[in-house]
Image (cartoon, rainbow, N blue to C red; front, top):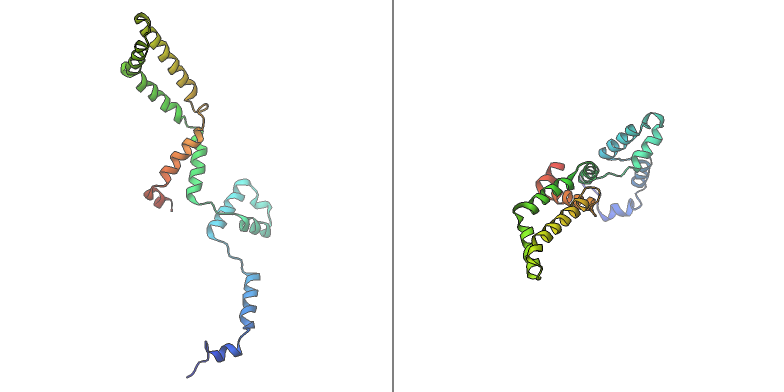
Length: 174
């Protein structure tokens, strides 16, 4: 049996292929493809806002169709950043930093050496070193807090992004 499909003779006879174009037009007008994640996220958002019951099917479809999918990695990053605002991360680090800085008098000893090298009176070296330590500790307590640390959210997000770049964690999120 001889088939002319795909031959030059076929192309001459069925060049415009009206049926194919007509079927494509009908399908494009009637069939709307939406990903499962887009449907799930769109419906969840409407339920969360309490709008689902008040909307018509056409309005629901339009809302879902316009819904953009946020990758899981980005959702985790955004949620973790939001949650981290209530966690006292910097304050925890502050306490450890102060303990390490004041432990063993190494910083105080270094300050005393600098003062002695600057020809400060020997009797005043320890007192001045102690005052300087007190000022440093006070400033750290003021600045190194969750509310006052400049760029705190950027630091937390940088930490989260670093964790999320791990291949094993990325595989868990898929």
